[in-house]
Length: 448
Image (cartoon, rainbow, N blue to C red; front, top):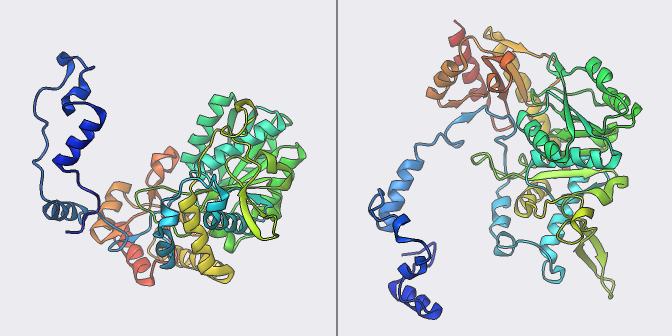
């Protein structure tokens, strides 16, 4: 039988005990008083053979509503996108999936070059000057951006749009509490950030303003108008952006953003169960020495050959803690590699076609759903998500969709009480006309 691990025999166990000089495994627990040790039998099933165990686990796994057998219209930060076959092939190479940190550049040139390529492509997509080698996810990247803005401006207030992903707002608030930074929400109006409220709140004590592009409702925020308001009070303009959308939209860097963050999940990273992801972080040149995490640089050796190294390492592992830009000491190198391979395989033309496909299919879905009598709220330019008002309770609608092998959209009532029984519908390039029509039909049947 092909083992996925090396099983430990009784002989192996005895040899290990002899090496450490202990007669039995029980002796390893002598420091724990007998009175507090568990004396009974654990209430678990008896051990099975590997074939029997695999059969049982496969049976359990088959109960999952996976994206291979169900049409998913669930987005809200995790999306079902096309991933080129080559992504998994490259990730499965042992020099990549077993690597941790390229501290020794002389033996890590492959990984360092892959990360350098990732940084370069993120800069091209966002219109920014410098990108780091990735962060844990979009939420932590955004929180780091807020803290960078506070430290750079020496101000202790951050404005954040209520149309930013609710979980990202929670992460920003968590970071801000530790740094004693006040976070103030800008309300949304008609599905986009309220510009009048932004003008009123934007004072000269604001460190930075955070918006999402496209925002949580899928709407396209007017970044140019916002930039003028924000920079008039010398605040920093922070944009959280879906990188795939930037294949079709004007990049935030071209619209005056100081920091652009987001999640590279749409490129080659499966939805899985919501993680792990890969946060990206891009800035203008003036902020390069304040970027958290790692930066990979390109250089030449003494013979003039191109090489790659970690550079500008302002992390707490390398300098005094009080001088560090961040306590983020790791990154998502493997997921950054996945994103890099996916973007390379798609190419500039492919990324643009994929982004446009999302816009067109979402528009078709909106039209089909409206024709069934369902209200689409927050009308206006959007990417691949939009909001609908349900004809019945979210739970009732979602269950009826599930019975037709359709995974419904996100329940907005869980994070916006005023949007009870409203659904955020995501339509990616993988959704077919038949699947979209089936969604519209089922919603229409519930309306009747």
